Length: 246
Image 1: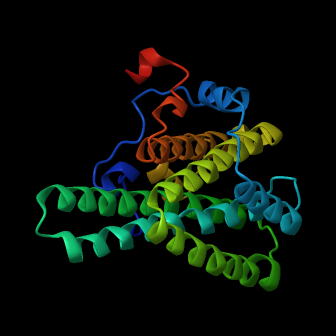
Image 2 (image 1 turned 180 degrees about the horizontal axis):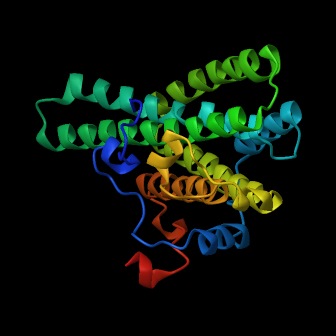
C-alpha cells in the first residue's frame, strides 16, 4: 500500500520502480487519442454496470463520479492477488504454475497501488474545490456498490479468470474514456496547478488537467494488460506517438 510521500519522492519509486509510461509522453496527444478511439464493444453485463453508475450519479462526469470509479477500480486486482495466492497454496511444487501465480500476485499488487493513487488524486481535488458530499450518496452508497462488486469480482476470478481479465479491460476502457472526457469538459483544469504533496509525487509540476490526463493514460495501460492476459492482444491500444513510446 502506498504511504504518504516524502519530499522529492515520486510515484514510480513508491510503486517499486515500475514506470507505467515512457519519458516525455505527450499527455495532451494521448488524451486526444483516447477521445478519438471508439470504446470497446462492452458485454451486456458491462453495459448494465456502467448504466447503473449513470443511473445513480448521472451521465455528467463529475469528481464524485470519478471517485466512485476509483473506489471500484482496485477490486478486481485484489481478487487476482487472492487467486494468485490460492494457486500458490496448491501449486507451489510446480515451477511453471508457481511463476504464473507469482506474476498474478505482483500484477494485482502494483495495479492496486496505482489505482489507490488515482483515488487520492480525486480526493485531493475534491478537497481543494470544497465539493460538498453527502454521507449517503458519496460515502455509504459507494461502499455498498463496492461490496457488491467485490463479491462479483471475487467469484469471477475464481470461476473463470480469463473472463475476469476481460471484464476488467472493459472497466478500464470505460475509465480511460471518462477521464479523457472529464478533462475535455473542464478546460479550467489546465489553469490550476496541482500543488499538494500527493499530486507532486504522482505528476511533478503538473496542472490538474495533466494529472487527470495521466490517470486516463494509466487506465489505458491497465486495459491493455488485462487484454493481453485474456489473449486479446489484437485489441491493445498503442501510444499515439510510437517514436516517444519506443
